[in-house]
Image (cartoon, rainbow, N blue to C red; front, side):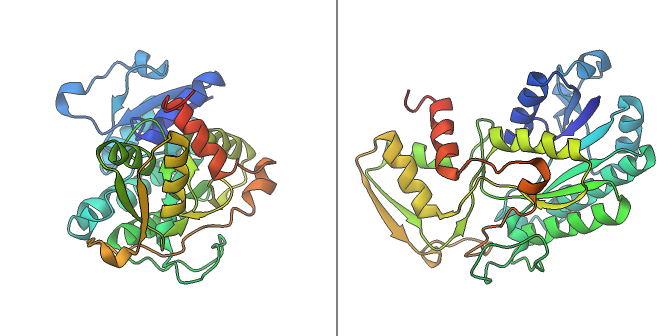
Length: 302
């Protein structure tokens, strides 16, 4: 079995590669690369070596690459995640989050292989007041959320063999994320303000990677919510992070209205993961356990 990974250099893509290597599954890692880093060593790519360039927004390129790579499945980790920037840069957001996934769906359909695509809790407006189920009607508040919802719709339109997996508050070693920001800010300040009116579920890329591959193996196509168990506010999460790190400063709860942002965030976008657990046979660890393991991975403490 060989899996084509797009967005392989992101935080989810990096941990997914590690899990594939651990399971001894062949994969071809791709990402959008600058000209000086592009290479065409297919043998190395087939061995899970150097990441190859792939622009998922280019249908001709996607079709040609898929034909040459001959994957048995595609996992799309590529995404435009700049939530505020997307309000003005919406064309690029829609290109990466919607047109790109559509192109991958077309290629997957032509080759008769499954596509796993990732979406977000930001497809919801957060006004329900309780965790969202997979069947709840989306109503995004931002251009970013709209682009991700459109991506879901296009993927479903162009292939039947698809997993649409909504994630939230993703964190891992690869890139900048909330945990890393809190730790960095705590080094510079003895007082921090964090919002307590944004509530969702953290999702650790190490746990996600295992569940993603287990879900792929089931062949049970559909929409899923995948996060660590439980939910919290940004403030609660920051408090837990700082307690574990031994920070002695003062953490102050704040409201979203105190911070000017271009894009509106949902207040309560936690997602119920049913029927993921029933499909793969287990629930992901709780967010506290995941956060503690991540801090150990960062060597914040032993």
